[in-house]
Amino acid sequence: MADKKLQDSRNPRQISRARLELCRRQNGGMEFFMKISEVAEITGLEISTIRFYERKGLILPDREKGNTYRSYTDEDVNRLKAIILYRKMDLSIEMIKSIILDGEDLQTVLRRQEEILKEEREHLDGALDLCEKIIQDQAADPLDLDYYLNYVKKEESQGRKYPEVMEKLEGLAEKAGLERYVGFPVWTRLMRYKWLRRFTGAALILILIVFPVFMVAEKALEWKNGQADPQAFIAWTIIMFIFISGFVNIIKRI
Image (cartoon, rainbow, N blue to C red):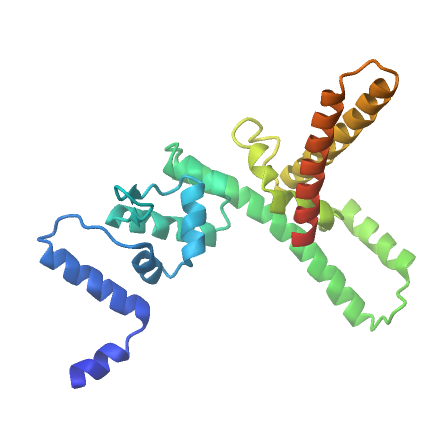
């Protein structure tokens, strides 16, 4: 009875680790397979998060023959633990891939991340400084906007950094996941700052929307003048609606 109370006092992750160790002993120390629910309990990750890392190719569990169930090993669990640690340092998925899959030197990646985090911290320090000044001034709405913007401009001229005014663009590119296509590995030095990668990603989105709209208008005009195949107009119209629909869904998620 005392053992039962002791077991019940442990959290689910501790119980899962105990089960894992028991299975190892019963299996003679040989490799054995786990279900995704067991991996979720051991790592503390949501099942949807584990599947997300699978889709990104960070873990590759075996699939059982004849069905779609996946089997996970100790290696998968250890890799997920590494991913958790890397994400705690705010490493992007692409950075984690470069370490786990491409074998890039960990210290090199972390030094690059350190530069990025320092840059972001400087921006946050600037934002905090501005908040504190307005609080200390006991300023009320409506603010003296010109005064505070001039204050920011003066501080920036002296080396103080503030967040860039591009929240929507950042959110748009981040939700679309396009930032992973820029900056790594081709433009690593040029695109080492997150805001620049997201801005480039947002620009790509806008181009992908504008171009199909332009093509639909052009094909419609050519069709009207009898110079284009109606199928070309229909094809570009479908492409345009696909891109616009995706764009609207991304906007809703920001």
